[in-house]
Length: 295
Image (cartoon, rainbow, N blue to C red):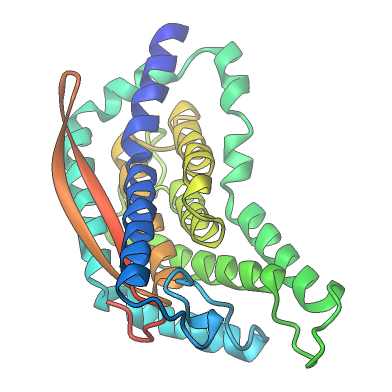
C-alpha cells in the first residue's frame, strides 16, 4: 500500500508540476531574446528600471488604498487575460479526464496511519488562514518594521511580496467559494462542497506569485510544496483528484493575473510524449516590460 501511495504522489507531482516546466522554458527563452536584443541594439536603456528583464517592477504604492484598488483591478483583469482561459481550459480538461479515477485514487491514498503523518501538515500549510497570516506578516514587516526609504516610501521587497500574496489570496478565495456553491459537489465524506479544492487553489496561487518574484529557480520547490498540499487533501479524503487538479489551474491563473499584469505574455500548448502516454505542456513566455492592461 505504501508503494502505491508514493507512486500516486509521484504522478501528481508530475501532472501538477507542469507549470514549473513551462516557466523554466520561459526564462530561458526570455534570456535569449534579451541577448539578441542587446546584440542588435548595443545601447542600454536610459532607465535601468525599464530593462527588458524587469517583468515585475516594484509598485509605486502598497498602502491599503492601493491594495483595494489593485485587487479590484485583478478581478477585472482575470477574465480579460487570454492566459486565464488557456489555463482554466487545460485544468478543466485534465479534471474531466481524471474524474473517472477519482474514487480509485482516494482508495489508494486513504488508510495508512504511518503515511498519514507524512501528509498531515498539508492541511495546515494550505489553509486559507495560514496563507493569509504569511501574507499579512510579510506586508506588515515591509510597511511597519523595515525602515522607510530616503524618500519616505514604505514600498520594498517585503511589502511588495505581501501585497501580491494578499491580492492572490483574496481573488482566488472569492473564485473558489463562488465555484463551490455553483457546483455544490459533495466531498468524499458526503459533505458540501468539494469542487474545487480551496487548499490546492491557495497553494498554487501563492506558488505562482513567489515564483514570479524570485525567478524560475523557485518554480520547482514552490510547485512541489503546492503539489504536496493538494495531495494531502486526497489522503485526508476531503477532495477528489479532479478537485485538486482544477484547483491547481485556478490558483495558477489567479496568481499569474496578480503578477502577470506587469508584463505582456504569450502561451503555447503542445503535446509531449511521456512513458506510457502523452502530457500537455503549457509554456509561458513574457514579452516586454510593464503593460498595464495585461492580456
